[in-house]
Each structure stands twice: as structure tokens, then as C-alpha cells.
Image (spheres, rainbow, N blue to C red):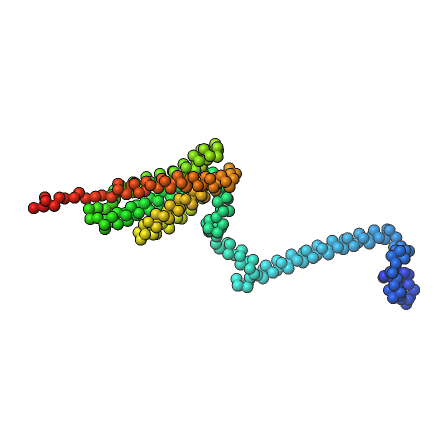
Length: 307
């Protein structure tokens, strides 16, 4: 059987060795191509060899894939039999997600503090939340009613300490007045934004359209009012200032949500926010005007009538 050189393809006799590598047999490309063509195999042999190589490579790839799948399956079985602290971080995270189903809800609530701008934009552009947020409005009305009741009661105690003729707050009508002023302030917050959109921006929107985008505003308003309830007994004026800040921030968030939906510019956003805050701050005078209504003054007895 004839023998050929592995490097240059030259036919060799029995026991003969080729010295093509030591003599620089591949120094010129033209000579190397000529030698390779002279001693290469026929085309039929090349096609057969290439087909065999393709089959062998396919078999090797299939065997490698099968081996890797088998190894992975064996590793998973071994991992399941090990204690929990021997598993890797990916398995621990997967086990934790199954054990804590409410983790996504907690992350959604934390998004109002960690990424407020993204959360406001997400809520404004969410097509599934285009209804009036009745639950959020009801919760805000209840906590506002509680805050106004505590505020007027604390003010009545303060006036009673200064004047003995003041008997205290009218407890029977305090809750009614507190609920009425809560409804009025929440209504004015949306009404001022709506009327400014119609007059300044010429947008054909309704009051219901404005209320549909008020969910993020009421979320932050509830946070401010809850904090104000904790300080109303100790420092009522500081608590009043916190509630006012909560309404101002709610106006800002509400206008920002509207700008995301109706593609309003930054100038329009600032203009709407300034005028809405001015009008709403003026409406807070109703809080002071209700103080004489809720506080009872005892009738003064003349000194000469006492026998």
C-alpha cells in the first residue's frame, strides 16, 4: 500500500521519511498548491470523505448534547438530595420566590417610594385602570374626616384653656362638618385642575376624565394625612401644615399624570401646577371659618344677678 507525506502529500517508499518541513517546503504558496494538486485524492474520494466527516461530526454533536443533558439531570437529582444550604444561589432564589408569593405586591408598593416617577407614569398609562378610583377616594375621605375631627377637638381644648366660657366642641356635628369639608377639598382639588385644563390648555376633557387619573395623587395624599394624624394631638398647627403639603403634592402628582396621558409640555405642567396650588390654598380658609361654628360659647351671667 502506498504511503504519502502528511504535510505535503508526497508519495513515500517503505521506510522513507519526507524532509519537507526542514527544507521549507511551504515557503512559496504556488509550489505548495502544485504539489498538493499532484498528490491529492480524486474528487469522488473527497466527496465521500467529506460526507463521512459530516456524519461523524453530527454523531459527535448528538452524543455531546446527550451527555451534557445527562450530566445536568444527574446534577439536579444530586442537588435535590442535598440540604438547602448546599444549593447554589439560583436555586435559593427560586425556592424563595415560591415561599413568598406576595413579594411582587410588596415590591409594587415599595415602588411608590423607590421609583415614584416611574410608578406615576405606569399608573397613568395603564389601560386597565381607566375607572374612577372609588376605593382610593373613599379611604382618603375617611382618614381626612378623622383628621379634621381630631384637629377641631384639639383646637377646642386649646380655646377652653384660654377662655372658661368656651365649653368645648360640638361633638354631634363635628363628624358631619369634617366629612363635608373633606368632600369639598377633594372635589376642589380635581375641579381646579379640570377648569384650568379647559381654559388654559384648551383640552376637551371632562371632570370624570380628570378623576380617572387621580389614583397616584390619592395614594400620596393618604400618606401625608396618616402622618398628620400622628401629630395632630401634640402639635395641631404642624399637622395642619402637613395636610396642606399633602394636598399640594397631590396636585403636582395629579397634573403630572395628566401630562403623561395628554402629552403636555413642561411649561404647561408648571403653569397648571402654580395656578391650581394658588386657588386651592385660598380654599383652605374654609377650615378656619368652621372653627366658630363647631365651638360652643357658654352664656355669660351678669354679676349683679347673683344674690
